[in-house]
Image (cartoon, rainbow, N blue to C red; front, side, top):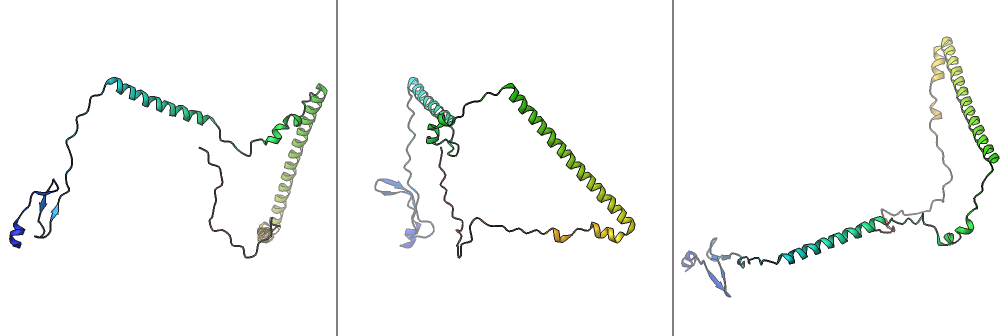
Length: 198
């Protein structure tokens, strides 16, 4: 009976009105069926009226243009900055707080210009004098080192040697708040409270 069953090849098997291919390869009791093919022939495309197609295209174009206009309008509005905006109470008092503009006489303006020029000349002379003092000190130092080198090379090497004790500099000042005992610092927690603007 198994021989007869294994030699059978059931090509078509009817189950509830659908046709399936059934085969018994891989053993007499191992049935495998292919997936049902429920496809149907493609429907013919209905020819639409060109006016209807044109109206559809026009609607799509208008919808896209409207979206573009909306985006352009939104792009012009600037993102408000809370730090720059004026408080309402101060905006109401702006008239009272505004100082009247003062017009100075020509003598007063000339006096201010002369004071500014005098101050500029004073600062220029001071800077030039400081540069001259620095140059004189460097020249005197170099001249003293040259004379020391003529007297003794060992003293010269000791004089130009860098003093390492001057370089490490540790400064510790008061902090804003004293340290909190047994404080457990948060490990990477971050809550973003910034406003979202779209």
